[in-house]
Amino acid sequence: MIPSTTRKDLMIVNMGPHHPSMHGVLRLIVTLDGEDVIDCEPILGYLHRGMEKIAENRTIIQYLPYVTRWDYLATMFTEAITVNGPEQLGNIQVPQRASYIRAIMLELSRIASHLLWLGPFMADIGAQTPFFYIFRERELIYDLFEAATGMRMMHNYFRIGGVAADLPHGWIDKCLDFCDYFLTGVAEYQKLITRNPIFLERVEGVGFIGAEEALNWGLSGPMLRASGIQWDLRKVDRYECYDEFDWEVQWQKEGDSLARYLVRISEMTESIKIIQQALEGIPGGPYENLEIRRFDRIKNPEWNDFQYRFISKKPSPTFELSKQELYVRVEAPKGELGIFMIGDQSVFPWRWKIRPPGFINLQILPQLVKRMKLADIMTILGSIDIIMGEVDR
Amino acid sequence: MDNQFIFKYSWEILPKRWVKKMERSEHGNRSDTNTDYPFQLLCFLKLHTYTRVQVSIDICGVDYPSRKRRFEVVYNLLSTRYNSRIRVQTSADEVTRISPVVSPFPSAGRWEREVWDMFGVSSINHPDLRRISTDYGFEGHPLRKDLPLSGYVEVRYDDPEKRVVSEPIEMTQEFRYFDFASPWEQRSDG
Image 1 (cartoon, rainbow over the protein chains, first blue to last red):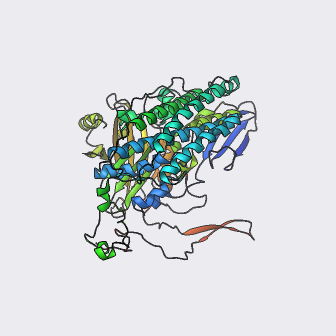
Image 2: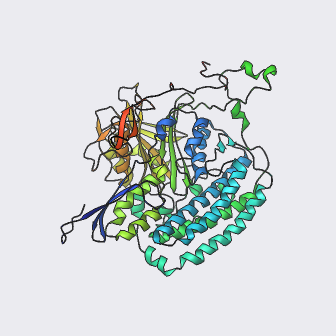
Image 3: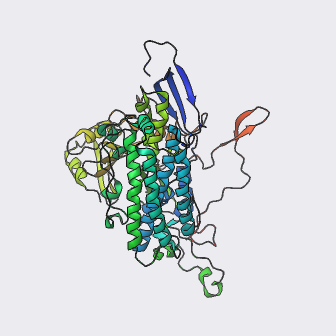
C-alpha cells in the first residue's frame, strides 16, 4: 500500500462479488485517491465448491460431469485434460478418428471461449453491440455441440480412450459451413472494433506487462504470447494430432491490452484454419478405444451371461489409476490448464490438483492497476480473461 | 515430449545436502528435498544459466496420513527456455513451517496461501498468509484426509435473525460410496 503524500483520506471502494460484467463473483477492494487507483486487492473464494476434494471420491467417469463446471465457457478443454491424465498413466492409445474429433471440438471450444471473452470485454469498455453479435456465433457453435454431444454447454463427451459417440451424419458439412460463415463474422468484428479510435484510446498502452515479468508471474496463454514470448503448448508438447495441421502460433510484441486483444482475435482465425484442415482430413475408424471398457475386477460376473443378455448393461468403464504422479497440461484458451494427479492403486485418485490459468493470471492484477484510473481496472480485468469457476474451483 | 536436460544437469550440479533423492520417470521428473532447502533450491533453479526455471506452474500439497510427515508440498516448475519441467517435493508435518518462495516466484503468493488454507502448512515470513478459498469463518483445513467430504457445518439463511447462520450438518441420507466395477453391485470386493 503506497500512501499518497498530498491527500489524507483515501477512499476504499468495494467492487463487490456481484457486479455486472460477466467475470463471475470476484470481489475487488480498491483503494482510490480521487480517480487514481492506489491499490487493489482481489478476494476470491466465492465460488469455491471443493472440486478437488470431490475428485478424491469419484472415479474418472463419475467425475467428468464435474469438470465442465470449472471453466464453463471452454468446456471441452477441462474434459480433455481429465481424460488425458489417465490415458497417459495407462499408456492408452486413442484412435486416429477420435483424436481428430477431439481436436475439432477443442478448437470450436476455443473459439466459443474467445467469443465470450470478447463480448463482456467490449461491454466493460462501453461498446454494447459486440456483446449481442457474439452470441449469434456462439449459438451456432452450441447447435453443433448439441448435435454431436447432446448438450449445449456441459457436454459429457470425452471418454478415456476416445469420445463418447461418433459424429452424426452431416455434421461435417454443417461445420464447414460454420467455418465459412465465421470468417465473415471475424472480419465484421475487425471492421467494427480494431481501428475504432474510442477503443484504441481505452485499450492501447493500458496494462503493460513485459516479457520477463510475464514469465516471473507465471502467466500463460494469450497473456504470455502478447508480451512477445511464443509459447504455445500445442506446438511445444505436440499433443493430440496438432502436428498434422499447418498453423502458426499467434503472438504480439507490445504486451498491453491491445496486444492481448489482437492475439485472441487472430487465434480465432487460426482455430478456423485448424478446424477446416481437420474436417477435410478426418479419417474413418473407431471413435473410442473399446478395449478399456472391458476392465472388470471380477472376471466373469454372472450378469454377463446369456440369459441376462437383454437386461445387462454395458460394464461401467471404471479405470484403475496406478500409483504414479503425473502433471498433464493442455493449452486452454485462457492459459495453461493443468492437472497434477497422484494415483493410488484404486479407482479414486489420491490427489487431484487443478492448476487453473485464471488463478495465476489474476495475481498480476494488483501490480497492473497501480497508477491507473478507475476505469482502467475493468479494461485490464477484462483483458486478463478470467472465469471464476476455474479460479475458485 | 519435454527434454530431460535440466534434470540431468541439476542432478550433477546440486549439492547433495539439498537434494535427498531424484527420481525420473516417463511421467515427469521429480526431486525430493528437505524442508530447509526449497527456497535455495528454487532460487538456484531459477537463476542458474543452464536450468533457467523461470515459471512456477503450481504449488500443491498432498496429504498422506499414514506417513509421519504427513504432508508433501510439491512445486511444479517449468523452464520455457529449455522446454523442461521438473517437480520438487518437500515433506512437512502439521507444525513444520516452510520457507516461502515468493521472492523468486511472485506467483507463488497465492499458491502458498492455498496450501495453508487447504492443508495447514504455513510459511515463515510469508507476506500475506490468510485464507483464500474457504468461507470467512471456516474452521479446519478442508483437503486433509480426516475432514469428511461433506464437512461439519452447513449454512442456511435464518429469517428471524436476518443473516446467514452456520449449523452442524444434518444429512437426511447416509453417505453412499460408489465404488463398483459392475453396475449391478454396490460394493464389490473383487
